[in-house]
Amino acid sequence: MFTKVLIAEDLDTISFAIIQLLQKLGINEINHSKYCDDAFLKIKKALHDGLPYDLIISDLSFKRDHRDDKLTSGEELIEAIKKVQPTIKTIVFSIEDKSFRIKSLYTNLGINAYVCKGRDSIQELESTINRLCNNEEIIVSNEIERNLRTNTLLEIERYDILLLKSLAKGLTIEDISAEFKNSEIKPNGNSSLEKRVNKLKIYFKATNNVHLIAITKDLGLV
Amino acid sequence: MFTKVLIAEDLDTISFAIIQLLQKLGINEINHSKYCDDAFLKIKKALHDGLPYDLIISDLSFKRDHRDDKLTSGEELIEAIKKVQPTIKTIVFSIEDKSFRIKSLYTNLGINAYVCKGRDSIQELESTINRLCNNEEIIVSNEIERNLRTNTLLEIERYDILLLKSLAKGLTIEDISAEFKNSEIKPNGNSSLEKRVNKLKIYFKATNNVHLIAITKDLGLV
DNA sequence: TTTAAGTTTACGGGAAACCGTAAAGCGAGA
DNA sequence: TCTCGCTTTACGGTTTCCCGTAAACTTAAA
Image (cartoon, rainbow over all chains, first blue to last red; front, side):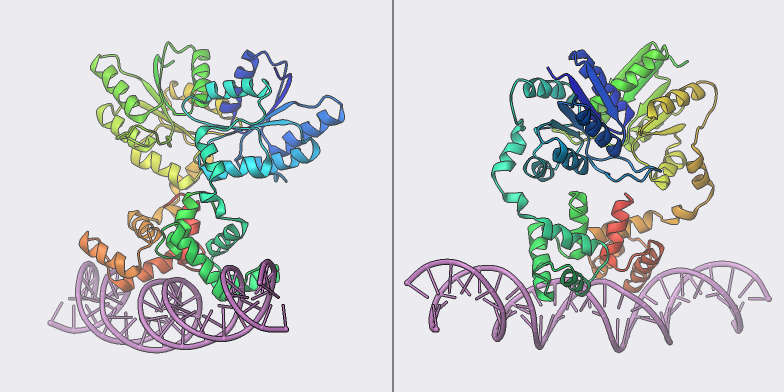
């Protein structure tokens, strides 16, 4: 079993339940951070002391606070941690259930497992921890696995997200074209941008720009 | 202290923590529902048996499921409960932090207290329960109280929400005008609708319709 | 009834979105 | 080098948005 585990989770109710579970599993050293920055510090400290964590269980979204943290999301936290300790086992425990977002956690961040907060998630979390320390490297639920193979949904790339975000900020195609030229993002012609927006509208079955932003906001893309 | 409490909360991690708290407070009968419909049934059954609950602690948002529930949100659940048992004490325990949304819980649903899920919410929940059974009728946090008095944000009415939602569905002003005429919602002229949208844009500091929907989506208005 | 003030609607012109077509740019292979 | 195919860009016409002004209507007070 794992011996030293860190929990990154802002909601006290949830971290309370996770800690209870870990204690039940007989884990010796359990630490908990309510803030991403704090979690990252603990990881670095432990590494520096020669007593690194062997598992991190992290949430994705953290509430804003009076503090202004450098790391504001689970994604950022994990990315930072992987840079200093690439071999640490990582479980993401979040309410997010959009499969394409979860997929990117595996492909871009290289997490080992994803457990979705829900009606029976404590049990799922328990079995996931057991399987992970049983030498299983990567644990993926069936639904996500199907999505990992097919590229259906993940042809939406960084470029599209940027475009959608610019639209959501109230910029016109003209504005976005100028901005993209400045940032040397290509393609950046008016016409190309229009075409791309049009593809997105077809893809998401939106009737106009307003509708498109409403849909992608709902999906958590923007 | 309360003797019979119902918890309506889908996430097992959170309900686990709440139950632990209630046990610590020495409450005899603690029940828990993961579904709104189920919670409502329990309330009715207890009432019918002459052993009604004297407190309900409810979440606001519940995950969708294979079941198709009649009641899908905490708002709907509380509204239904108040109809059959108006005197029951109600605490809403949710992650929602938009003050105008919380305000409507007090004014429209007549809840007794709101506790926001966060970094120290277990303690808050505990003190709220204590104050409630200590004959305090309504417990409002400072920030919300300020909002309850001033009408600043709540002049956004049902009409505006309807308008915003129609826009988010991809309808044009023309379409919305027709729809409003059908539903006998007034004003419904093209020009009036445009004017109203314009007011909303000024209010929310949006540069165009797309921006407006992005902003109000973020606020949870749509 | 008249006046005044506010609300709702009509209209018009310029800007941006929307949508198709065609030209220009670019890389791979013969 | 030339050709083919693909991507990117340019352009023009229609619709919708955007925003101001003015007319029509409603309501309330004089």
